[in-house]
Image 1 (cartoon, rainbow, N blue to C red):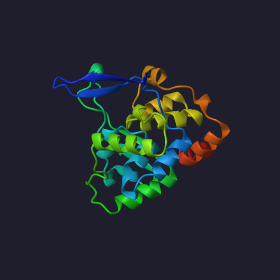
Image 2 (cartoon, helix red, strand yellow; image 1 turned 135 degrees about the vertical axis):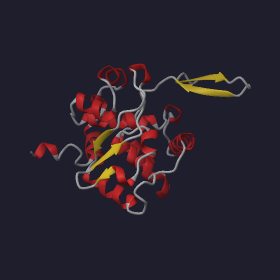
Image 3 (cartoon, rainbow, N blue to C red; image 1 turned 120 degrees about the vertical axis):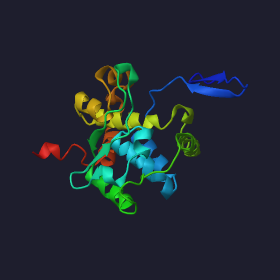
Length: 211
């Protein structure tokens, strides 16, 4: 019996599952194998999410005009509204991107109009693609993954690289308590993992350390 998922029933009698373990993230080799297994047209959205830590809804509303390729950053303008904190609309935030990812994003942006969304996808379809591909490459628990786990992976990689928690919270649009409650220890990564994390994140945050 799988203890990581719980089955419930809709009013019309159809069953659905709920993940009980929401702490799962991609180890670096898992991410690399996952991306390799995708078709070329399926990669850009997921690549964007890993490199920015954006939520799915933030990602699919991103447009070419939101990038500053000279400074290597992107403005996430369609952000989550935190009603419990009295917000009536989400607060836009600008996040840095690595030089390597900036080049990839620019190639996509140049093919589109300034106000055109970079990505066309649904969260249901993307989650299905994610689980189907993870199962295909032999991940033992594909049911524990959704698009949100890519955001969690981004946060874990930055934590492993020693980025200040306050900076990670600002980048992800989290408060400190939320981050502490939902992100685990970065000490789980091996030396080989860390080499791959550095490759995946590129020079993100490294430019600031030169000055």
